[in-house]
Length: 366
Ligand SMILES: *Cc1c(COP(=O)(O)O)cnc(C)c1O
Image (cartoon, rainbow, N blue to C red; front, side, top):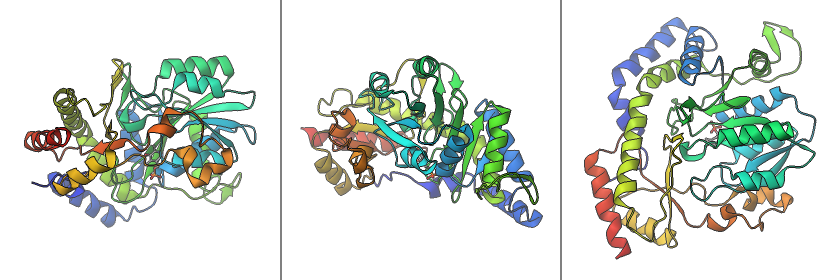
């Protein structure tokens, strides 16, 4: 038996007829850029995440960058970013003319650490990047309280958290503005690149739409210089089809996670992730810690079980951020990147394969 980390082919086969039809329709309507399929998906997705506005863009990194630019913060503002994330969360800050300041992540659920965030706030801090990492929502009440105390904006990086809920509210528009990625491997993934910005502010949504479309609202009437970042019609139509199945696939992820949590809890050398009671985690990733991570990964590979590492190098330790000199800070994230291991998860795993996984991993620790 082989267990894949991700199986997009399996997923496609579940919905092949719907997808093929959607693609044909877009092509016969030649609605490649803009048009009704993009509009339809924006409406579908804003409903899904309970936000009043959704703006489709070219990818998740652009979504973050455009969202930050739309906030119109003073040049070189400090934006606090958790040290355990994908580089986009930080890259978008620098690319929009601001300064990245890293803080630590929480050792239980790996989202932004509230005490560490507090310790990094200065006069220049203007925003915080709330990354709902691995599909676990950040503690939004705490973030909102801190934002209020220090007059900060909250940007939600929801690239791993489509449909995740904080106290019953879907992530995305709980803070000021949220960014989603539809990279193929995400919980809701396109067949290429895609992204979206969501917000409850009509003004921010309009600004984002203009930035993403050369600073214009109508053809050739450019109010300012923007850029070109568009979700295309084919991707939008594919995403609308897949969105109809997302909740079922999320339930499948939660089922796999619950099985892991229940059946691996006695393995003392594995540290399992902890879900807060207020969280609906959508488990983009199921990340454990193990002191002998590399040996465990090789062992599983030898049994035809694929795993991943998210992320092998904490952001402050990346060459790209050495200039910030935060690589030696006493962060949980800096110390533990060598222990993180992402177990296989997704709708492609049935009861049989999760059981096989658990039965196979256990002997490693004997
Ligand atoms: C994937 C991801 C992004 C970037 O999305 P792209 O669509 O690949 O640009 C940003 N932040 C996080 C946390 C991600 O996982």
